[in-house]
Length: 68
Picture 1 (cartoon, rainbow, N blue to C red):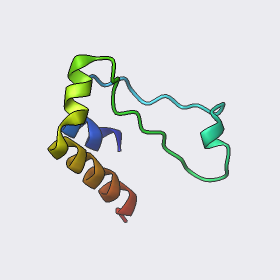
Picture 2: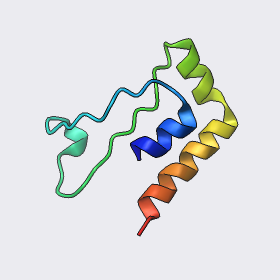
Picture 3: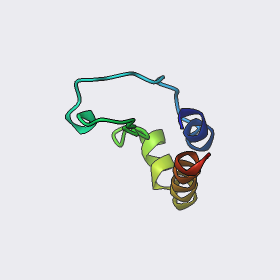
Picture 4: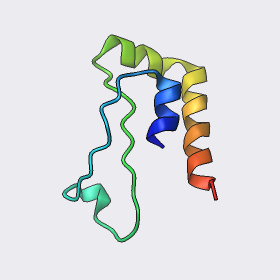
């Protein structure tokens, strides 16, 4: 998922960080918390506000989740 989203967003790769202390991840099974950028950062915000980028992000997430 990281690779797919980086290709679309073209933002800085802040790497994957494994966390076990986040409440949203307190269940059995795999989980992903997706952070696409920082709204306080102009480039990130402009990228996230682009309707085509949002569509591409949604499609990439779906493709990764549905991949065999």
